[in-house]
Length: 211
Image (cartoon, rainbow, N blue to C red; front, top):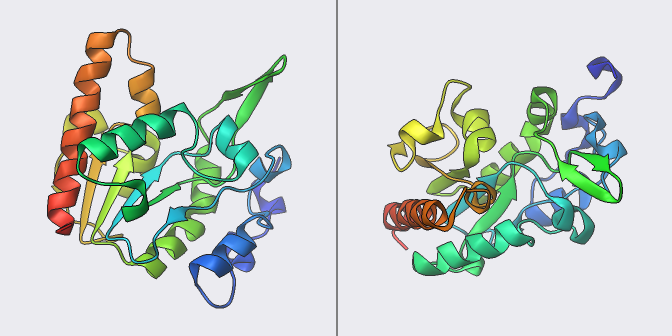
Protein backbone atom coordinates (compact mmCIF):
# COMPACT_ATOMS: atom_id res chain seq x y z
CA UNK A 1 0.00 0.00 0.00
CA UNK A 2 1.13 3.53 -0.68
CA UNK A 3 1.99 5.42 2.51
CA UNK A 4 0.23 8.59 1.31
CA UNK A 5 -3.12 6.83 1.54
CA UNK A 6 -2.93 7.00 5.31
CA UNK A 7 -3.66 10.26 7.13
CA UNK A 8 -0.99 11.84 9.34
CA UNK A 9 -0.97 10.17 12.75
CA UNK A 10 -1.26 13.54 14.47
CA UNK A 11 -4.83 13.85 13.22
CA UNK A 12 -5.85 10.99 15.54
CA UNK A 13 -4.29 12.42 18.70
CA UNK A 14 -6.75 13.93 21.20
CA UNK A 15 -6.78 17.69 21.67
CA UNK A 16 -5.83 17.35 25.32
CA UNK A 17 -2.92 15.03 26.01
CA UNK A 18 -3.63 12.82 29.01
CA UNK A 19 -3.00 9.10 29.30
CA UNK A 20 -6.74 8.25 29.48
CA UNK A 21 -7.47 10.43 26.44
CA UNK A 22 -4.57 8.94 24.47
CA UNK A 23 -5.59 5.41 25.42
CA UNK A 24 -9.13 6.11 24.29
CA UNK A 25 -8.01 7.52 20.95
CA UNK A 26 -5.24 5.14 19.90
CA UNK A 27 -7.49 2.33 18.67
CA UNK A 28 -8.95 4.67 16.07
CA UNK A 29 -5.54 5.42 14.59
CA UNK A 30 -5.29 4.81 10.85
CA UNK A 31 -1.88 6.34 10.34
CA UNK A 32 -0.31 3.17 8.92
CA UNK A 33 -1.59 -0.14 7.52
CA UNK A 34 -0.82 -2.24 10.61
CA UNK A 35 -4.29 -1.59 12.05
CA UNK A 36 -5.84 -3.55 9.19
CA UNK A 37 -4.87 -6.97 10.57
CA UNK A 38 -4.34 -6.33 14.27
CA UNK A 39 -7.09 -7.07 16.79
CA UNK A 40 -6.64 -3.73 18.52
CA UNK A 41 -4.08 -1.09 19.38
CA UNK A 42 -2.08 -1.69 22.54
CA UNK A 43 -1.33 1.46 24.51
CA UNK A 44 1.18 1.81 27.32
CA UNK A 45 0.37 0.89 30.89
CA UNK A 46 1.52 2.13 34.26
CA UNK A 47 1.73 5.17 36.50
CA UNK A 48 1.43 8.62 34.96
CA UNK A 49 3.96 9.74 37.58
CA UNK A 50 6.47 7.00 36.76
CA UNK A 51 10.07 8.16 36.69
CA UNK A 52 11.08 5.21 34.49
CA UNK A 53 9.49 4.34 31.14
CA UNK A 54 10.33 1.06 29.40
CA UNK A 55 9.91 1.07 25.61
CA UNK A 56 9.78 -2.16 23.62
CA UNK A 57 9.25 -2.89 19.95
CA UNK A 58 5.57 -3.79 19.42
CA UNK A 59 2.77 -5.86 20.95
CA UNK A 60 2.96 -9.61 20.48
CA UNK A 61 0.19 -12.14 19.96
CA UNK A 62 -0.96 -12.17 23.62
CA UNK A 63 -0.77 -8.41 23.87
CA UNK A 64 -2.81 -7.99 20.68
CA UNK A 65 -5.55 -10.23 22.05
CA UNK A 66 -5.61 -8.78 25.57
CA UNK A 67 -4.97 -5.13 24.69
CA UNK A 68 -2.19 -4.80 27.29
CA UNK A 69 1.60 -4.53 26.86
CA UNK A 70 4.04 -7.21 28.01
CA UNK A 71 1.57 -9.85 29.17
CA UNK A 72 3.08 -12.79 27.25
CA UNK A 73 6.25 -14.82 27.94
CA UNK A 74 8.51 -11.80 27.39
CA UNK A 75 6.40 -9.82 29.85
CA UNK A 76 6.77 -12.50 32.50
CA UNK A 77 10.54 -12.45 32.05
CA UNK A 78 10.50 -8.66 32.27
CA UNK A 79 8.56 -8.85 35.53
CA UNK A 80 11.22 -11.22 36.93
CA UNK A 81 13.98 -8.84 35.87
CA UNK A 82 12.21 -5.85 37.39
CA UNK A 83 11.80 -7.70 40.68
CA UNK A 84 15.48 -8.69 40.65
CA UNK A 85 16.37 -5.03 40.11
CA UNK A 86 14.26 -3.90 43.05
CA UNK A 87 11.44 -2.57 40.92
CA UNK A 88 7.83 -3.58 40.37
CA UNK A 89 5.68 -3.31 37.26
CA UNK A 90 3.45 -0.85 39.09
CA UNK A 91 6.40 1.50 39.66
CA UNK A 92 7.16 1.98 35.95
CA UNK A 93 5.35 2.69 32.69
CA UNK A 94 5.71 0.11 29.92
CA UNK A 95 4.91 0.76 26.29
CA UNK A 96 6.02 -0.02 22.74
CA UNK A 97 7.39 1.91 19.80
CA UNK A 98 4.59 0.53 17.59
CA UNK A 99 1.06 0.09 18.94
CA UNK A 100 -0.28 -2.58 16.55
CA UNK A 101 0.90 -6.19 16.19
CA UNK A 102 2.74 -6.85 12.91
CA UNK A 103 2.76 -10.52 11.98
CA UNK A 104 2.47 -13.13 9.27
CA UNK A 105 0.06 -16.04 9.48
CA UNK A 106 1.37 -19.60 9.41
CA UNK A 107 -1.64 -21.87 9.63
CA UNK A 108 -3.35 -21.03 12.90
CA UNK A 109 -0.26 -19.29 14.26
CA UNK A 110 0.62 -15.59 13.99
CA UNK A 111 4.37 -15.12 13.80
CA UNK A 112 5.95 -11.85 14.86
CA UNK A 113 7.47 -9.70 12.12
CA UNK A 114 9.66 -6.69 12.74
CA UNK A 115 7.56 -3.60 12.02
CA UNK A 116 8.57 -1.66 8.90
CA UNK A 117 10.33 1.68 9.25
CA UNK A 118 7.25 3.44 7.89
CA UNK A 119 5.11 2.07 10.75
CA UNK A 120 7.73 3.00 13.35
CA UNK A 121 7.79 6.56 11.98
CA UNK A 122 4.00 6.77 11.74
CA UNK A 123 3.55 5.58 15.31
CA UNK A 124 6.14 7.91 16.83
CA UNK A 125 3.60 10.66 17.73
CA UNK A 126 1.90 8.24 20.14
CA UNK A 127 5.17 7.48 21.91
CA UNK A 128 6.10 11.16 21.94
CA UNK A 129 2.73 11.96 23.52
CA UNK A 130 3.15 9.31 26.21
CA UNK A 131 6.58 10.65 27.11
CA UNK A 132 5.36 14.25 27.06
CA UNK A 133 2.63 13.42 29.57
CA UNK A 134 4.79 11.30 31.88
CA UNK A 135 8.06 13.29 31.67
CA UNK A 136 10.20 10.40 32.95
CA UNK A 137 13.69 10.82 34.35
CA UNK A 138 14.84 7.68 32.53
CA UNK A 139 13.72 5.91 29.37
CA UNK A 140 14.88 2.31 29.03
CA UNK A 141 14.76 1.08 25.43
CA UNK A 142 14.37 -2.68 25.11
CA UNK A 143 15.98 -4.17 22.02
CA UNK A 144 17.24 -2.92 18.68
CA UNK A 145 14.00 -1.59 17.19
CA UNK A 146 13.19 0.68 20.14
CA UNK A 147 16.82 1.72 20.54
CA UNK A 148 17.23 2.69 16.90
CA UNK A 149 13.87 4.44 16.81
CA UNK A 150 14.94 6.69 19.69
CA UNK A 151 18.73 6.79 19.42
CA UNK A 152 19.22 6.55 15.66
CA UNK A 153 19.65 3.85 13.05
CA UNK A 154 23.38 3.48 13.73
CA UNK A 155 22.88 2.58 17.40
CA UNK A 156 23.84 -0.98 18.36
CA UNK A 157 22.51 -2.43 21.61
CA UNK A 158 25.19 -5.12 21.61
CA UNK A 159 27.87 -2.43 21.66
CA UNK A 160 26.38 0.31 23.81
CA UNK A 161 23.89 -1.29 26.18
CA UNK A 162 24.08 -0.35 29.82
CA UNK A 163 25.30 3.21 29.23
CA UNK A 164 23.59 6.43 30.25
CA UNK A 165 22.86 8.46 27.15
CA UNK A 166 21.63 12.02 27.36
CA UNK A 167 18.77 12.40 24.91
CA UNK A 168 15.83 14.50 23.88
CA UNK A 169 13.13 12.08 25.06
CA UNK A 170 14.32 12.08 28.68
CA UNK A 171 17.25 13.31 30.76
CA UNK A 172 18.70 9.80 30.55
CA UNK A 173 18.21 6.96 28.06
CA UNK A 174 19.52 3.45 28.70
CA UNK A 175 19.48 0.74 26.04
CA UNK A 176 19.26 -2.91 27.02
CA UNK A 177 18.14 -6.29 25.71
CA UNK A 178 14.55 -7.08 24.86
CA UNK A 179 13.16 -9.92 27.00
CA UNK A 180 12.00 -11.78 23.89
CA UNK A 181 15.59 -11.82 22.64
CA UNK A 182 16.70 -13.40 25.91
CA UNK A 183 14.04 -16.09 25.50
CA UNK A 184 15.50 -16.88 22.06
CA UNK A 185 19.05 -17.30 23.39
CA UNK A 186 20.61 -20.59 22.24
CA UNK A 187 21.04 -22.22 25.65
CA UNK A 188 20.43 -21.80 29.36
CA UNK A 189 23.89 -20.37 29.98
CA UNK A 190 23.34 -17.61 27.41
CA UNK A 191 19.87 -16.88 28.78
CA UNK A 192 21.26 -16.55 32.31
CA UNK A 193 24.04 -14.24 31.16
CA UNK A 194 21.70 -12.02 29.15
CA UNK A 195 19.14 -11.94 31.95
CA UNK A 196 21.88 -10.71 34.31
CA UNK A 197 22.68 -7.91 31.83
CA UNK A 198 19.03 -6.88 31.71
CA UNK A 199 18.83 -6.81 35.52
CA UNK A 200 22.03 -4.76 35.74
CA UNK A 201 20.67 -2.24 33.25
CA UNK A 202 17.38 -1.97 35.14
CA UNK A 203 19.33 -1.41 38.37
CA UNK A 204 21.22 1.38 36.61
CA UNK A 205 17.91 2.89 35.55
CA UNK A 206 16.62 2.68 39.12
CA UNK A 207 19.73 4.41 40.53
CA UNK A 208 19.63 7.08 37.83
CA UNK A 209 15.96 7.79 38.47
CA UNK A 210 16.52 7.87 42.23
CA UNK A 211 13.88 5.28 43.11
